[in-house]
Length: 178
Image (cartoon, rainbow, N blue to C red):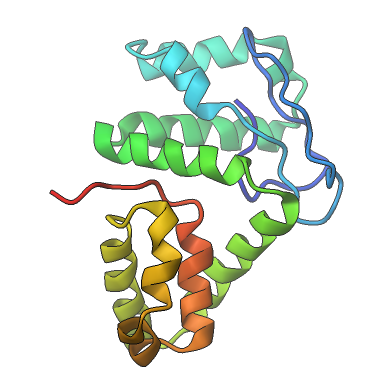
């Protein structure tokens, strides 16, 4: 497991036992860069193991112990939060984290900036954006931009709001309509 998106630059990635290191992005060391992580793989490899035992496994791992104490605490807290999620929510969160890892540092910064800008919108616009975001999750990823550029979305959302939605949807897993 490594620090997840939003981790501080320069914090070493936790590779854990049984992980092959992933190649670093060429932008490693840039502000906002978070090393690729393995939370999903680690949790899947330890599926069915009680959270307390998973935590003990972390504490026994030399790679984990080389991390600064604050990062160790954050990772344990994150492990416990994810382990407590319902299965569907857990899978979505892990898929989103994997999608975020695949982005370049610049793309990741765009997603982070969009999340920040979303939170500065007035409450009524945030609520409208949330509804659109939930609707667009059921649109296949290769068709999302076309929908965002449709007359309906152009008349409802500003260019900036559609950009925020577009960036946030880059990491959102596809959820087929029910």
